[in-house]
Image (cartoon, rainbow, N blue to C red; front, side):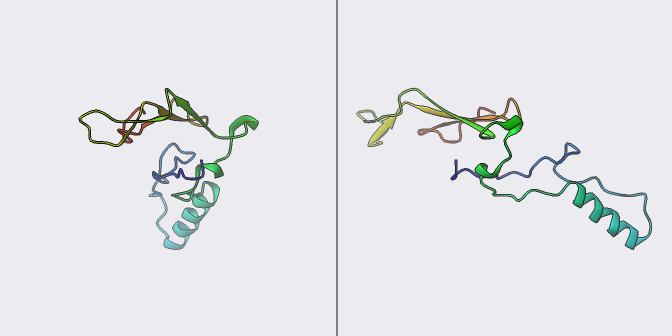
Length: 115
């Protein structure tokens, strides 16, 4: 899990990736104070943060579940793919914080979308 990192912005408490724009304050100093207070109450998370640093929900040991399916061994290839070895296994990473979010990774197609 230490090699996995967040690449997208984190979702804030308001359900968005950015804070709402404050439009009802005209005074520039008060506007800066309001923005600072808003960011203090709901700060941005660091991007490219390791998944190991995520807070686990409900006392679980980790915020992520990693499962391996299929045969994880590498076998010599005798096919037309010209790859020296083939793996028939798949790895699925799923979030325990955001139910339903998961990513499937296969060695032949690491960008296989399963979200």
